[in-house]
Image (cartoon, rainbow, N blue to C red):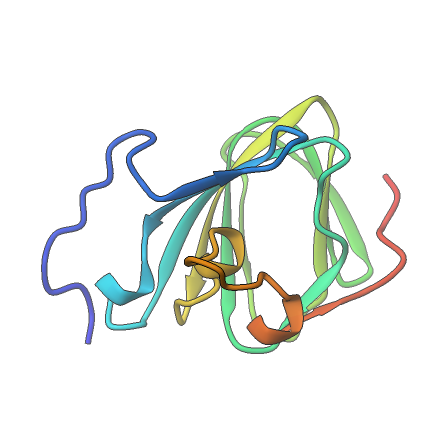
Length: 143
């Protein structure tokens, strides 16, 4: 099942959370609106609050850089990217980012959906990485 009804999320109109450090995530399309096929999140990440290298065991991740400059780490490779850059990352591939400036804003799409609730937990749900099929890798890459 795919989207059966239009999903129109205005700017800052989706369910969202912010961290004390200034990062934020907003659900643009929740997986329950797509029959679980995909979900989308706008993620504004502040330098110093980047996620560590990690691997998805359940979903593919597509990343579009809306603004900001960052280093993307995919497997053993790293590349400097900015606005307009796009990555399609299949499950099982380690990846991460390091923000080069103050912050970066990314559009993240996950297929199948569900990982949006890691970024924006529902109610008292814990954003424990393992419960979402994420494997975190240490140490985090250095730019």
